[in-house]
Image 1: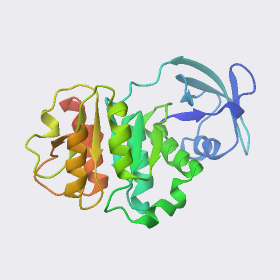
Image 2: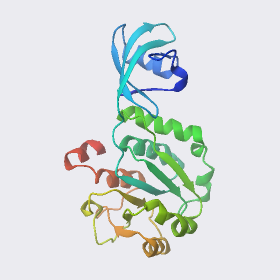
Image 3: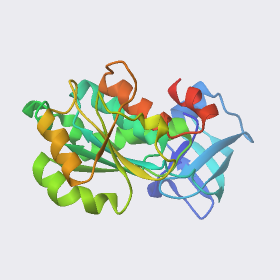
Image 4: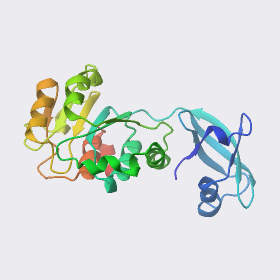
Length: 245
């Protein structure tokens, strides 16, 4: 936990918060904070800053808080992602939160198993839990917005163009003539398929509507490798290795 995220219910006054859950346990037992120590804090959806430890009990930690720093900037890519298998979903949600993606659109494709849509990890509370874990690690206070689309063709034909709003739309697919690493460094939408990739009909439809095919390299990648690879390629070269660690 590199940032203690604060919720509305934590506030005792305009500058005092009381933590009584896993965040207090983390501060007391893992960081071993003492009175007067400073920790990084941030209001969910708001500013970041510092908290000074002013009281410690066996169950709680009280902080005097000064919030003055804006959250880090959003990633320049929004993501359209075929719904991954449940065991990958939490990790992927954490990844998009760590990268600061603003919008993630989970879509159905031919190779997405119907059972995936029944996963309890799609419940709003489970999505929030995974996103907050990524935000705590990356010192961010703004969560990605997660959108769910259960029908591929209506999404592509009716929603993809307005979603792009004049931005390029890149669809990652083996055999693309152009590497995503070589596209212009501008805001864009990136489409990532399921294990096994998009089927030919899906690629053709997306290209017919707006998408342009790109590749992520010569190797076949799993979804949880392809997504951070695509997001890291939009970063400055010096930041890419850090983002993939």
